[in-house]
Image (cartoon, rainbow, N blue to C red; front, side, top):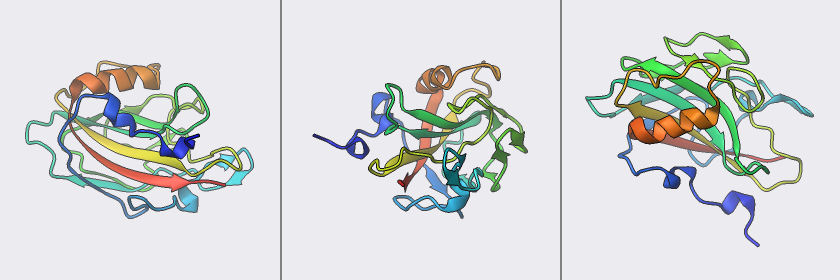
Length: 179
């Protein structure tokens, strides 16, 4: 049997696009998520704070950005969306730590749709106890449109569907977490 954490990269289901540089002062690709990025609830006492993200090298024709955090290893038929930010201006190249924490948002334009916890904002890692490490795909999507044409009531799946049509490049950092 293959463990959940050995599943495919969720972006393999979307059309391939070029990559660009995504960095963070809070996490590194392949490392364990630090306590500030862990959920505060369900037996966890993390900070439930959105991470610092900084990006560069995206296409000159980028019209806007979206930011997502997705756990494909969640024990559900659809994974788990921890964070969905849409309609960030093309001039945005960085989000400070805590820019979108809980329902408190200080985004430089754009907005959050609800995550799978049920609120708009970042929700930290909270895999079931005893499960293998889950992968958290933090992605910045460079878009060919300034707006995805959704509002705050959109589901993460609808945003993901639209990202498949409008993403022209993507930067990704994958963090890991288990308990």
